[in-house]
Image (cartoon, rainbow, N blue to C red):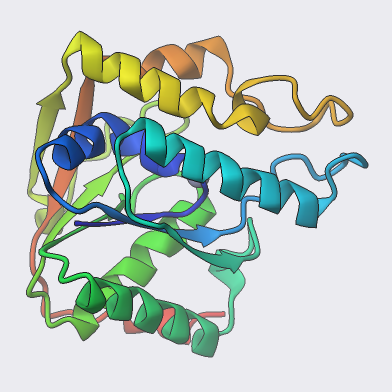
Length: 235
Ligand SMILES: [Zn+2]
């Protein structure tokens, strides 16, 4: 299984409980982080972007250990917040890398963010995964998770025909606890660790409660002959 996360922590938030279940059932779970996550606290002097990115990588690794995932993640280290405006060539090479990783690990399933997730990096990552899947000739089972839909977005948006089926994975209390511990490893996002940027991002109690409810919803992306060329062309 290959999981593609726009930012370090989206994997845990979107599907951490399910990933833990997969890993403990002997499925090799591989994770790719697309951006470096360095934009969560843009005004911090103690945690300038390079330091914040390094801390967030360490947090991501610690969170994967909590989920019992033993593979080494891949960090593509693209600029946080800027995926939608990447030049077409960079998008293409990024998608090629994701496809290459999927081939190398023999992924039968690719899990990425839902393309309706209301965050530009999440939408852009969904398009990258779509491009990667096109390079794989859609031979893999493709699932999507959402992070911000329902919290920020319009929950009434009906899935299109390409997202015809959604299904819920119900988590046991023990799996929720593992997910909570994994999310807590992302200390830059869940605590006041970065204390010199009042504008910085911090998961609030409302978001935490929503993300730790005992269910994870997946959208089953249907094979499509359409190639996401608009995304490649766009700048
Ligand atoms: Zn994110």
